Length: 464
Image 1: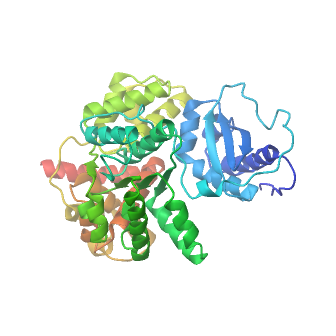
Image 2: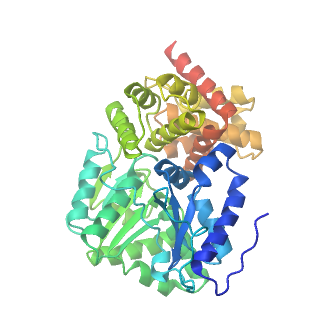
Image 3: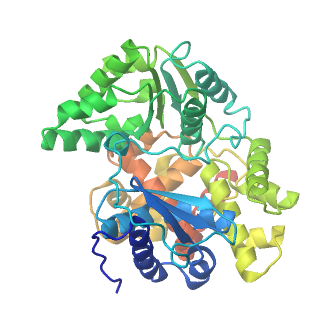
């Protein structure tokens, strides 16, 4: 059991070192031993000041692996031990970077609380720059608009509304805009927030009678980046507050950038908001074509100093078509397996490791959610009525989520259309189900195999 830390007058960096020992205790029980020894254990605490905990990793790959899988949990564990809200920054270091657990500590200093003005907004991810964004036919307009905004904010393209499926680069572009503006216009206050965070913060402000402070913080920013505005749907009070915040910033000439998983016209929001979303620049990001997918893999491999044979890149790009995060995740999975098993990274390894996780299909199939429901009901031995109903037993919930996932993968149905096919479910329920299955198939080989079998049955049946 991790030891409990009680903060007094001890140095902040010492407190971080002790808190990190607790994090290691917890993660050692959750992460597989090879991954823990290779990627987690070498991380060292470097500094803790003004609410920012800096950790160092001697491996670029381990740094990005941790950021993608465990950074939120690490932050939560450290906050629990340190007794305050913090930001966690993971930096790549040389192997000889000093660790606070081994080196003499600097003079004692009291822990400074996080800056209240900044704590309400989500920090920008330094990896999501324009330099690391691969441009193709599917995202050229969105990329060009984002760069134009970064050069001259609040002028030509205001607001900028960006939409597309999950995992196609919307968040990357928004962070790139923010990072570029911070560099080009350091005097401007850049604020990035997710739709669900805005909702939570507004509700908290109401409950704590701090709504004036909430409004002051939001309406004092110069650049407002709002990710996943679809989370405002169905929340009337939050939507109303968002509307007035938007008006205040827009009327002051401040730049507003918004993203969603669908076009403004498909959002069930107040007509006043939709008209404002559509009065500026609206651009979509579509799934990348084959050449762009290969380029994305090659760019990421080069950035991480990975050796990626061309035939492996083309194989991965062939089987993963609709999600850039899945592309990058597959590359990390291959690199980690090859490193841990000391195996060559070739096409045979890629087929062995990735073949059961991703659906390989070369044709656009004339399927609809109803056919998917029938196939899933047979495989999971549940009725279609159960799939479209409200029963919440575990086996039915998993079957329902698999059916929604495959409906998104194998049909052209939109999230709202899929929701209607499943008894009138909200689009956010559909999106949650898809994301849940995407995570499960990375670790549950049996479920992944079952999904592949259903997919093969549907695709082969459509072609016969």
